[in-house]
Image (tube, helix red, strand yellow):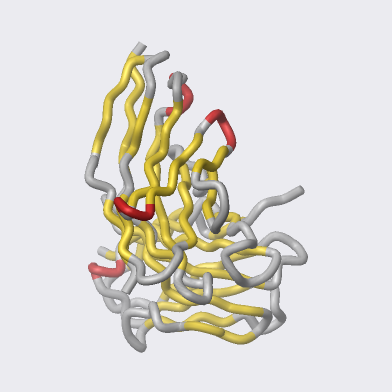
Length: 113
Length: 115
């Protein structure tokens, strides 16, 4: 069965610092992987996704993620964090049919000035 | 254009009551999903529609939960005999079609509180 682990419940970074949010997945075949962001009062927004091909994927708002099959990881990165990036971040893996998404428990990001 | 909308935004009910939660997907989106997000957790899949039919309802926790999408657009999630454990944010998402290559667009959710 598919599952996603986000080991960090909460992360605090200074504005302008780099960011890495961890995601580990469990899946038997090549996974479909996603990162979503959820701001207070807002719906989940897709940041980026990986299906196949280049293991480094670029997303919106300056985010990128790298798929590492050997480590079963899909970590999210941003070189310089902005105060507006403070939000909850969710990693997700899709099922075989792609119609069921399995989300991690999320990482809450706080950005300090 | 308009995104996915959900009504009501908040619903408070008493244990044992019946509730209906509504989702208006993006126009033209044939796939519609319901998720439940409990406090401190990620969204949990409940059910998925392709058109009018429930293509996968394996995530519904028990037979108190039911969802319909009679005309292939608006969907209603129905919960009978509500329990305190049903308290959560219920999220709806829609996509142009089914499958992971089609981005799911999420609504803001309905926060259900069962007293």
